[in-house]
Length: 271
Image (cartoon, one colour):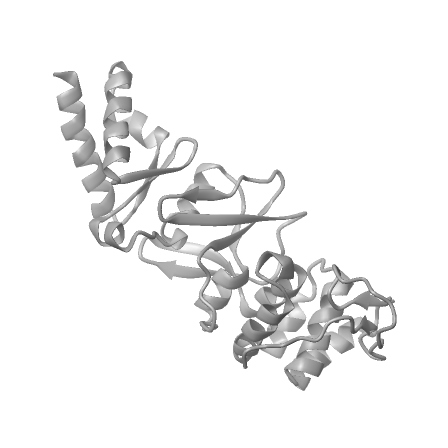
């Protein structure tokens, strides 16, 4: 009898969450709703929802509700729950790389996974039914370059176009390499402003990433206004020669006189 009562109440609980404009809940929410004496019945009821594909566990003690519309699509955008997840685990985050680029209008290459920046410690990749999230670790969260974006379930933190551009180059290996980076940057560059780029440069950024980004803006995309911002910044720093593609360390290549880039790779983009 207790199981039946909890089943009905759990269904009402799930319905109420969606009525409140949310698609996620955690164990603390469950404990507030149900008596601890029903612990076994609650576990049984949650397992029933898991089997039916109506609820997915994406983190220990954190659950995502799968509405009928998304159940048929077989994919749930992390934007709908990621902010609630990180409030639950009490850690800073932001949506970045291709995930942010798409939200800023760079739709040339849609990603089949989402990218979320976090600080240490690392989090194992989320790869469950319809949800795939890659967590990228940074030593510290940036002070500049984050903005909030409205979603159907609230707001999420995302990198602005300027920070996204820097991250794309710095973490090129996470999204398929420089060819893809340059293609995305070509579209993203339309949303990048000189003033905001100057502001984002106040973050702690590896100079090698800025050299590569400046080189791409200058020599590949021919975005002189943007490359000049980075050139002016680097003119006050001591820079050294760096490989354009770090994993191809070969000798005998030309060094660009301005960016000190060893041109050991020829970028081929889709624009």
